[in-house]
Image (tube, rainbow, N blue to C red):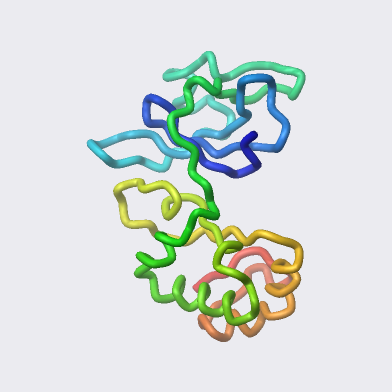
Length: 172
């Protein structure tokens, strides 16, 4: 079973992210994120409701079900599943200096490497240089560690928190 936000690639090269934990039999509720646009490259083109470009490529994916209206990709159309926590290679190859600082800080406060994951262009090789890093951290204890050390992390990376209340977006 695919978990929420797990990315996968279809037979025709589209990349989706899973939405939710409950899916119809033999299908996955998902949102398209990337589509092929040049040889070996993917274009980020989110189509949350399937009404921008997916309806022209795969109208059969847009359906009503007991889970409501949504985009449902049949299992047989899935070519590859990207595990966001299979991140050892991503961490090794990471060139972004702020990203390295964040990972080192997370490890320093007790988060294990296997609990640090990635979404988006770092997880899926889009053929383009990523602009930002979408981290995914596993576990309630790890969430509490981040909350307790969040201001120190911001100081470490010279970042600002927008909005200032709670954990939401770090801007560097």
